[in-house]
Image 1 (cartoon, helix red, strand yellow):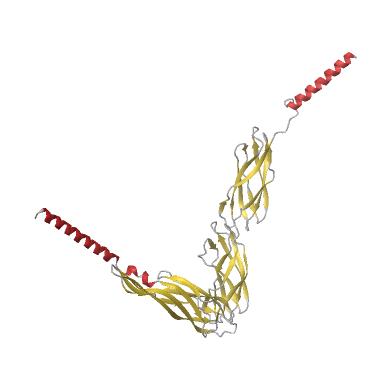
Image 2 (cartoon, helix red, strand yellow; image 1 turned 90 degrees about the vertical axis):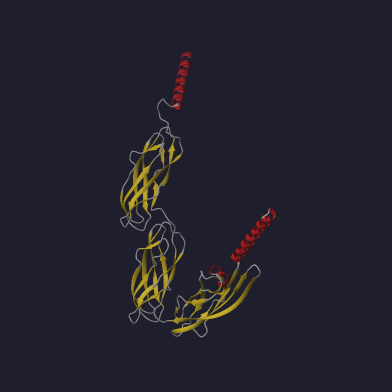
Length: 424
């Protein structure tokens, strides 16, 4: 084989290699997939009562169907776009107050909840009724992307689903007269009244507080309120501890009520809810210095009044004073046996100021160790208190310039009088 033949062979091999590589790349980039969305519709909570105004939540679950093509490309044809949902009460005794709603795109990985406002007439007959849910959407039926052809087949569809709504005249509850003493970092109470707005009596009723509420820790998860006849009410009080990381904002809580119906069967009404305020965090103690001044070079009894800001009795209260130059203390600890809510007591500390201290305001700090009503030992953050250093008062001895000047003036006056006397 001569050089020319060798060169031609090498070029041919290179061309074949490039063609083969291009074919592999083209094969890797080829897309040919076909499918469609496939919806299922649910009503997670389908029980309503006569005279009720509430939201009916429809859940859309897209279980898309891949008819042809690679699994990795299924999202191209199973995603529903421009989804519009409408609730049609048909012959059910329900008035839908929310118009049709556009909910955007729904993929297989993202079920969607759509809420509709409804009103149930007072004279609605108990029973189970069918309600239609109409769903309109667009989707891509087929996607083809090859070296020779690129195409998309777009479709629009309108589907109707039937769900069941139950009008129940059994015990149902509403929460009224809500009061909250909840505060960040403290224990408080949610109090209120549950009213049986149903047509039947409820016995052995319990008000429940969810245990998954963020930064809220109920000390009792269920509070018994006894029998609640139709049209009657019962008061409840739930003790709750609010974590220090909670936000001081109004919060809405679900407050399910469990009860026994007229047949003795245990039931739960999950609809009751309430809106309660959570107050911002506050200092455990109000700390108020009685005397805020000290003279440079002197010592004093530094008095501080402590007030219990909590809604519980605190015991074994041990305040400790911390000082830096120019202050010092030979007695920096105090003790208060107990303080009821709102009660105050004054503690005295020894406080000294250096004689060389510059007259101005300096801080001292203190913290307080105590036991709460549950017997748990706690310690507060540090409190910073201002103390003003005053100039020393002038003494009456000869050491002051004023006193020296007074003596000189007096001597001059005596000497002048003597000279005048001798001249006479």
